[in-house]
Length: 156
Image (cartoon, rainbow, N blue to C red; front, side, top):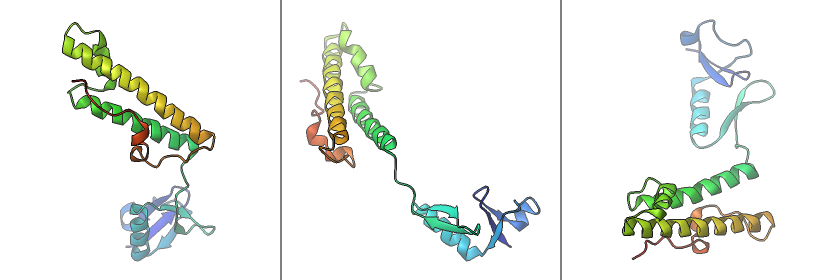
């Protein structure tokens, strides 16, 4: 069995499987090299081609500011949604719709979720503004800012 790597496709090819359907830029690699590359990829490295087209492992590019902000806002949303699900609402949005319910329990919980959602996003956007102004580092996780966010508590 002969393994090959194609820089143009970023793919591995086995001559026994692919026959002649292998890109012309493919270079031969050993089974051991293939295993090393896959192991590195499973540990977070990226496989790319060097100048000669041979596959090498590199550290992935750091996330962009937009990707970091998207992950941050997704984590904030997940925190709110997970809280709402503790009382069997589908999400924080679903819980908020109960603020006008005619059932007192649902109305109370719905309004509490509206208040919590609003306070949480106000705090989150302030944190982002502080990060963008250079006044604080970007939090690595929600755990880093839990104290800066409203407590997740249901009304009594």
